[in-house]
Image 1 (cartoon, helix red, strand yellow):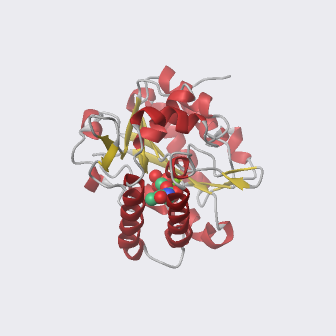
Image 2: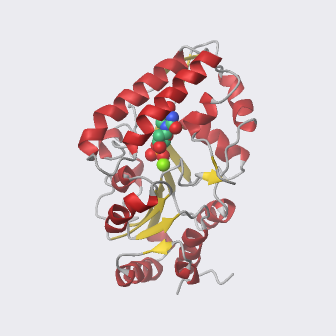
Image 3: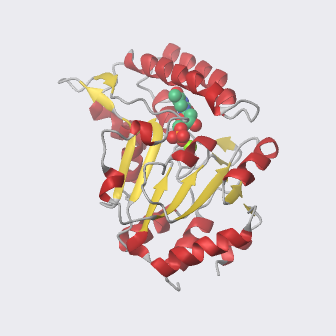
Length: 290
Ligand code: TMP
Ligand code: MG
């Protein structure tokens, strides 16, 4: 059905369930389908040649517009809070207040830096950001078949939109929900807009201001892509879900997190820096033979 599911990176608790959902998604066709995806470390790469790739926050943190002192403080926050974010021995409830703390402190530091709106494109251009292999095929397939893609990100919206723009994949079927910057009339960053989105509140609680999912109420079949346990609730705002296939990238602490991920996601991709499996599934569902 989908040869890519034979890849060594693929793990499924119930291949039978995956087969059943994929068949249903194909049978009901593109008009019933929508895709909900995380951005950082899901559409963007986790690593390349043994080095970590930047998140949308890191793109800013590492840029020349941040003072050396600011950069150090942001890095210290990352080194303190990231292990907490992915700690398999803490519950999401325990992590939630700590993530609010991380995002609040990081955004506070960024606000001290006088970041200019007009510098965003250059900041992204000069960064080391990389999208996963196969990203063009992914975006183009969805665009060609008019399938809405909702990117639900706890990263920085202005940055990730610019990454998509520069990669030439920011098609009209793509909508983004993320942390957006608010600039004053001189184009200087003055605050981050509400609501604050962090790794563990990506659910209906932060979707109040958007009617995105209500507008797509006839699309009751979902493919969800994420890399964090917090990403599993991203489609909770969709009413009347009929079929959902969840695909999780397991990037880090693989041995420790394997059990949890296999229980939670239908398809787990271990240390797979490509979108090959996702593209293979889409290709089968959409009936393309190439
Ligand atoms: P997401 O991929 O779930 O949307 O989350 C965004 C990622 O951003 C999350 O894995 C943590 C990371 N992050 C940074 O790299 N630097 C920061 O300053 C903050 C607040 C988050
Ligand atoms: Mg992520």
